[in-house]
Image (cartoon, rainbow, N blue to C red; front, side, top):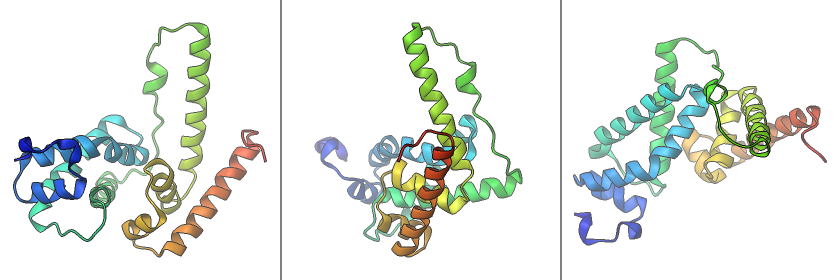
Length: 194
């Protein structure tokens, strides 16, 4: 069905409509468009690459199975994917009953053949990423979710409010408190200048 139309011209809402009507190519394009954001969203909560990949696949399977019941509510379809991802994460933790955060040791185990300057730069970037990941893990679930959705996924406060079921003002307050915590955390680590 899509072969007669330039795929770059079709927006996500149209892809969802086509997928709901049974167009598997449209769902394939949604998969390509949304897999990375869904995976990142899940990975930031599970801290395990393999489990995040499996759960991201589960999210797409659940979306596919729910297509006949999907109702366009005027939101971007990615919000629908994130809602399903959020529920899948809750189900995952209920089954796992293990709330400990795992460290991502994969990056440390991989050998990188680069010159010393590149190695130092990569090391600094990894150290900073680890500090950010550690600081985010110290936030409660709601604050962490708001920060991830806002600054890593690019959602507006209005979209976040709809996604997590709170008012825009509540989202702004959560965001302010989380940013203050992170600012103070990085200031204490001498990573943040006034």
